[in-house]
Each structure stands twice: as C-alpha cells, then as structure tokens.
Length: 295
Ligand code: NDP
Picture 1 (cartoon, rainbow, N blue to C red):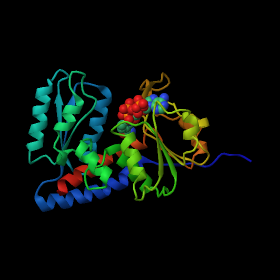
Picture 2 (cartoon, helix red, strand yellow):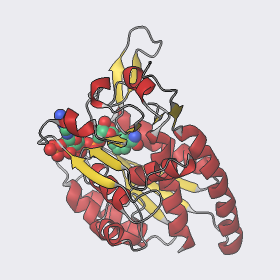
Picture 3 (cartoon, rainbow, N blue to C red):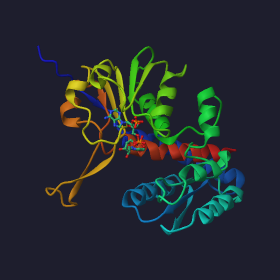
Picture 4 (cartoon, rainbow, N blue to C red):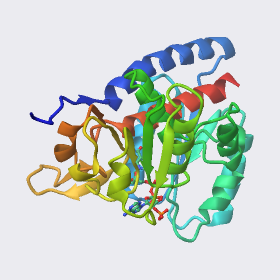
C-alpha cells in the first residue's frame, strides 16, 4: 500500500486576497466615518535587499486595500538617537495609526531599545513586550504578524487543531515563541498540545515525527526532511531563503526551511514557499493597522 497522500496547499496568496477584500471594505467605512483612511508608516534603515523587498510588499499591500502608507527611508549610518527621535515623532503623530521599524537594524543600533520605544498602541508588528504580554494573557492587543498570519491561514482552510500535537521548531521572540502560545490558547485555531523545540532539543527528528501540526521557523534552508515528518501531518514553513539558481532568469530561487518536494506527498496540508506564510504576515500587519485605526 502506498503511503502517499494528496496534499492540499495552505495558500497564503489566496487566503490573503480573501482577507484583504474584507480589510478594504472596512478601510472604506473608516475613511467615510472619520475622513481619513488607515495610515501605516514603515521605517526602513539602510539598503538590505531582503528588508527592501519586505517593506516594498507592505507598502504595496496598503495601496491594495486603500490604506495610506508612508515609507521613511533612513541611511544605514543613522544614529540610534536620531532613529529614536523619529520613533518618538511617529508615536506622537495623530495622522499615523500604526508603524513598523523593519528589522534587522544595523549593528550599531540596539534593536531592543528601538522596539521598546514604540508606543504599544501603534506597535502594529506586535513586538512590544506590552503587546506580547497581552497576547500571553489573552487580552486585546496587537498580535505578532507572522504567528497571527499562520493562525488566520489555518482558520481560513478550516484545518482542525483541537487536541492535536503541534510542534513548533524555533523559539524566536517574533515567530516561534508567540506561535507556541497562540496554538496552545483555548480558541479555534488553538487548543493544541504544544512542544516548542530549538537548537538544544535532543533528537529533534523524534519530536517532529510526533507532530500532527509542524510549524518550522529556524532559518535553515531545507532543514526539515521527509524522515522528520509524520504521514498526514500539517506542515507550515516560515523560512524564507534566497538561494542562487543559475537555471532561473533572476539567478535565484526562494526556498523555505522544509524540503517541500520531498515532504509535500506525506502531508495533508502544507504551505508553499513563496506564497504561504509570507503573504499572511503582510495581511496580518494590515489587520493590526485596521485595528489601530478603529481605535
Ligand atoms: P531566528 O534566527 O531568530 O530564530 C531561529 C530559531 O531556530 C532559534 O530559536 C534557534 O534556536 C532555532 N534553531 C536554529 N537551528 C536549529 C536547529 N538545528 N534545530 C532546532 N532549532 C534550531 O529566526 P526567526 O524566527 O526570526 O526566523 C526564522 C525563519 O523564518 C527565517 O528564515 C526568516 O527569514 C523567516 N521569517 C519569515 C517570515 C515570513 O513572513 N515568512 C517572517 C519572519 C521570519 P536557539 O534559540 O536555540 O538558537
């Protein structure tokens, strides 16, 4: 008997489109009510190509749903004091509903200090400890964009999560750790029994093979192989890597943390890369900005 299943894609482009229709309708309602549409500002420091791509897609997404956006490009050698002053200006600008400071920042700037200086009410990335604490307690606030985007994706495709064993690989503050909390909440999606794995986890393959839902955010291309995945699992790949590929016109291809071609036939559901988690992160940022504009 073949162990191959027909997998379905957790398609972030399709799901994002559906959500963005609703966001655009809400933006129009807000615009009519208060005389100005939701406004997202994005601070981009330096010329990092990946950051430029991410911020570019956020700005385009704003235009798509009728939000105003402002891209505030800063030189790579901006001082920390000048960046903090810019954050303060945005904190106090009544025309800006929410803003992000694209990470990573140049080495001479303390990222933690910058994140802490963002007013929690405008922190639409959901990285401020106050928002992370509110998430932890199940109180209203801004949820971190990538984990919340994944929750929205699972919700859209009605993937059952209750009682499932969810293994999250990676414990970063912006993806893995909040993801583990959201999947363990008493909600739908949620109600999973969660294992949070990281670089010190012993015998990772034995752990990942237990996952009904496997969420991977480690930043290593193709790290998760077919032997690490249970038959019928739901696999969510957060990783994004630009790999050199001479066969492509662009000279590169985008890959994730999981070996998609080998793993997909074992899965019930899997995210493609690109077109899975990435578009949902952007959509989630729009949802937070909408929330900020709604007050
Ligand atoms: P970080 O580098 O901050 O964290 C990586 C995590 O993976 C750490 O917790 C680390 O463990 C763990 N890890 C590293 N190696 C191993 C290993 N061999 N076995 C088990 N765990 C390991 O990454 P991020 O969370 O910021 O991002 C992860 C990936 O997701 C990146 O590729 C990034 O580009 C991508 N990303 C994609 C987004 C999207 O919208 N699609 C958004 C954000 C990120 P330890 O803590 O022990 O060091």
